[in-house]
Image (cartoon, rainbow, N blue to C red; front, side, top):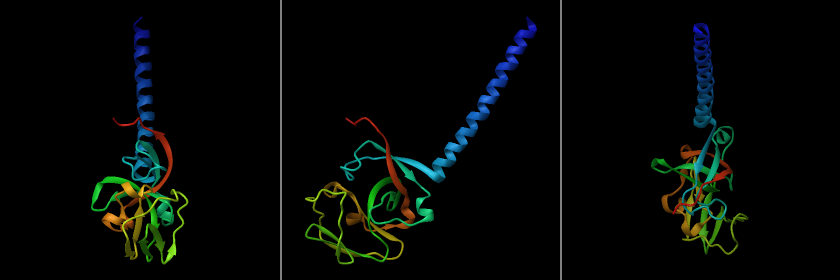
Length: 177
């Protein structure tokens, strides 16, 4: 009887040790992936409707812009300028060195009308403004232009504030009351 109790104790302690090692390895891989390669962002608010709605869980590729630069039309995850606690998703409209002009509800890049197939044709962009971007700056807008706080309000986004490229909706959280 004594041997079977000791055998069971050794078996349980060995199993616990093995499980702890495996769990630690998975935890380390998950943390490294989250901090360096891939993250998630929960969409809050209406600024990106109808393409991204409140409660969408979006995957963010953090290495996409290490090997390339953001392109017009990309949806990016970014820090709110001046505050690294808030994370937003917005669409890149203007690239470094370009001139963005909003006039009569339409967006122009370097004098050429920007065709935005991801927006409803009757949606207007206000207010009228013109902004010349310098090196390392991006002009971003929300898809729901009426309800979006974006580069029209707080200016261009420095490249250092871009977290990564928003990829796909992973899940949908239940609606908030």
